[in-house]
Image 1 (spheres, rainbow, N blue to C red):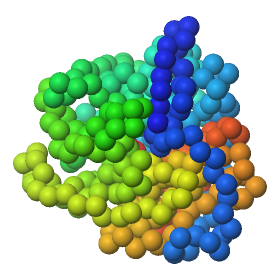
Image 2: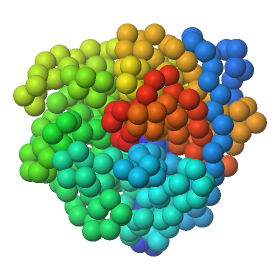
Image 3: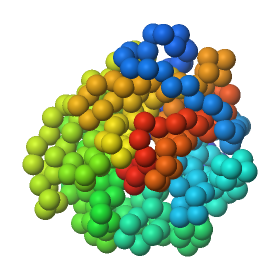
Image 4: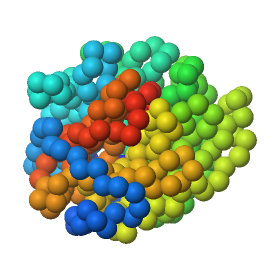
Length: 340
């Protein structure tokens, strides 16, 4: 999600200098010629459906957090949806239909994922620092976690679960001030204990476990880099290093997904495209929307790859509205490529 300044207006959260959903700065994504991709091949995504229009109250729409439920329906959040309009949508990608399953008066939700522990949907509220959970059908909203971590409030952006159901969050604290105050935070599955695993980060955004659950990949929006955080198996950190420096130009690093082969799908804010790397940092491909569509779109925030299949659905947004675009991923989908 991108840089985000929020203020209440008539009971809704209004996004000002929004660099949400990649949480980056507001930049226009001019389409590149397919032959100029920075390494690897070009994968051309095709429009599946238009999901949202620009909201009059917030001045934009920003789709994020795609995640498949057990019935194969895709859940998507609209970060900038005002009160009363769909903040979580359920999409039938085969029939190309969608329906609202949740809205509320204040939430600014930037990611979604199902917990392997209790099966509920978990949402990050970037503006208020809360983690909300819902029943699988969108009912029974509960606040899972709220408040400060190590004496500081959070701006939770993306999330990932380990096999036991503990949460790992990219906390973009300090983003609006342009300071490196961001963190990676672990919250136990009961929502009682929060631990800072990494700090001093430059607007951390995307976060995902690697294919073996040994470590976390996380991106820093304002540094255009992806780091590898090796865990010690006991809730702590063994080591950390910068793994990939993303050649994004005007675009910035947004959310991350990982497929069964360990490849990283790095969303871009400022350009409606995704960069795909292998686990050793080689640029394998660039996923792009058609050039004529890219003129009215600004970001490709995130992607969900069909669990056990290779069909991928990318959330793309801009002045032209909020869309789903489809493409064939390089490997099969797993939990790490489904939500967050």
